[in-house]
Length: 478
Image (cartoon, rainbow, N blue to C red; front, side, top):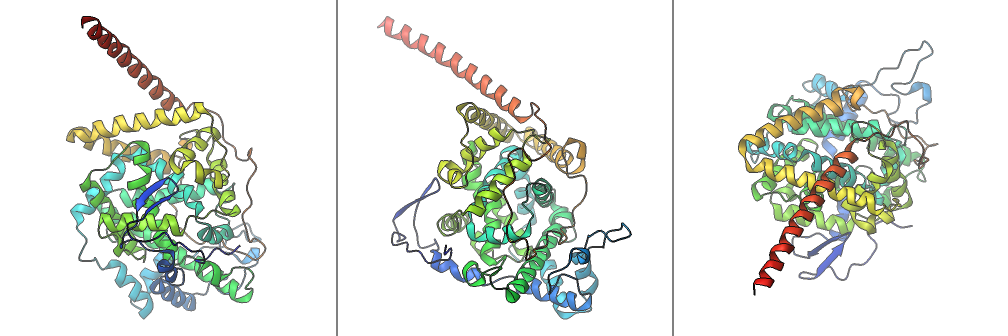
């Protein structure tokens, strides 16, 4: 099936209303048609690519140009029981920045602060995330990541890495969570040398390694990956789309679908933060200069990129299977399906072959949204509550998602090394069985959602009863 930009969109004319995947919007001159976005699938981060190529000449990795044998992969178990060491590309960039011109160019670029960066605004943007920590993480998990699997062309790369295999997907997502939390941690973390900054550069270098690996393999065996059809692996449009799912998609889709609407200044601040992250990661970012242009790009990508394939469905289902019944949320398969339908809509969820949730679990999702809305709007209304909530949420999320393995956290600090290495014999990732995983059924997040639902129902019922009595009394008096 041809997945490129070969279909016609005659209705993409200025002033025409479009409806895609639950979003309705009016097409403007700021939107980009699939044909206008097509060049981005053939361009990529050349600065990082040239730097990694230079590093490979200095210390050649076993996987750089040829498919590795299992015993020759970094991290593989050697006969003596030890693991082969993995290269830390970030440390290598630091070490050789003043010794090699191309490596130095990358180092200079990432440490040069753009003139449009306002550190006070960046810090406010970081606080937006923790102000709405619960709904923000729910958006990132079930809309940005799981729903993002609807991009069939991008999935062609993910499908070949094995990082979304049902047995490793949870750890893979927790590593992504480490990057996300560190980006929002505090101002020092996102500035040069901080944890969020370092993680962003490490992910940039990892993407470069994946791209080079698949391109070398495709050059030897063109049937392995069709560059003409899918574009360069981890191309500029892929990277732009990823930044979009962590920023604009959260602002205008994920949070509103849970009843949370950001204030104008919050939108400006959050976009400013993620524009700087995009800059660090070598991703096109001018589209984030204004809320209007960012929203138009998000809507353009809905039309251009979201076209699910069978591989999309496999990876999306692996996310649910890999996360179900695990701490800290202990969310069941059924409840995660309900979250997926709520955030992505019925049409996309069905295309991803997600099981349709029952009315009970949909009601639980409604209860969760009511809880998020109540806490979010109350806390942001009072400055002292707002600061306390931000600090508390930050502390809790780092503990339960990263530091404390007993509570479901990652339990180690990822350096985002190249460990899911594409190989010819593994061209795709299979969908794991429904009963895969080692989770247990416990009353976690679903209990909170149920209590919220019952509380809201009781308040609504009480209000309706007193309201009807007041109305009846008024009628009788007349």
